[in-house]
Image (cartoon, rainbow, N blue to C red; front, top):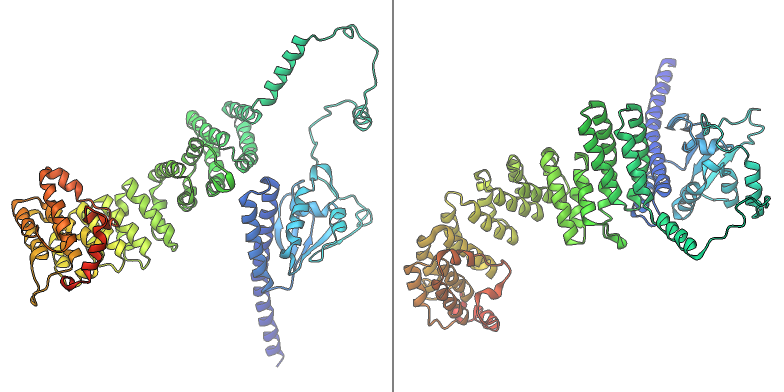
Length: 600
């Protein structure tokens, strides 16, 4: 009996421990989300979309936490945060250490309660971001004065805590004294007056008007000087020196500088830094230097790619050349983010330039975009397919064939269009299958692709579809696309079927719908042979206005050479008025479709 009780208690303890470990991971994720929200508020200017993004992610994490825990209560150690004695945050003690900022002011516990997202959370982040560790702002006094309801703190009197002073990071170690006497300076700042000294030998010299104008101009030049650009060049000069330790220091500085430049949309200096670092690393040929630069760019690539998503939003419009140069300098890790962000850029010129830069990046790292063809997000997979087509990535053809079988219309259409651009026989079967796809736009994309690839047996397949019983169920634009494609592929061999559609009668004596016959007439004009002309002349006096108009246009095309006829064969898929000369004939055409000759 005792053993059974012991076993039960042991099992219960194991379950509790496992559950606590899972909850600790959830709390750690929530703390990390809080840190990101705080850092974004410290790093980016107010109104930056990334601030809202990280704040929203924090609220999502808190919502998940409230389903498991009544609150998030954190014990604060010198450089750590603990939840139920489990470490959920730990960093070296430094002025910017999140835990140390509370610890140094005597705060020993921080608790977030449900409902904090409804207003107090944003204010808490704002207060924390505004407090400056470099100026020893009293965080405890700030939070105490605000008296939050859903943010609770527990503190101790740091003078009575354990009799010792709270350790502080030495920010001035090794700095030395830079000013001999700060007392006089502070007195001047407080009083606002300067004690007059005895006049020296220059006191009787007065500046004339030209001198004042000169000084004014020089001051304006100095104020207008691009300080950030000059500092950037100075850092790059330091990096170029043959001192590996100095290079590491420069890279550390750039890790702090680049996010701030991105927040201000200073893409010019960011692109300058990235490009120059790559050139200098390649110039040195040293593996350690190249690894330093690669590590920096890898760490920054995702953040830089995310900034593309806010281009042209809320009036943000950096130079297109600068932005394209920045995208071109990113590492492969940025490809998924760029594939999502670039299609959403509103400005077409900017979007096209960014797409060109992305294509160059993908050409150097094709594996990333091939992986995206299998993405669960249909829009992401479709955009990856378009990129594969643009850069001519033939090794991705098997993945495009798989993509053409997915249930989403957007992915199937993108896959079919990419296979057409690649023009390989690998996707011929997929293109042929797509001719019977449930989606109208996909069928039209497939028939255009068939013309580009010209797989074996394509004309016979098109003939079967055109002569089938369901051909009349397709709309005018689709019928035109299929018949013209058939005319291009089969040439004079297409005339018997097209002539039958134009002039033939069904077994009960009725003809096909005028729209279908008009499409056949235009397709015969594409063939352009004597037999095609003969078939058209038989229908020249047809009573149906759309047919008569289409025959007239087709006969005119016989005055053009074969190349011009083939060029005319490319009809906009949605241009239904292209079948007639007079736009008013379209109304007659629709009426005739349901008239006595329109039975199909």
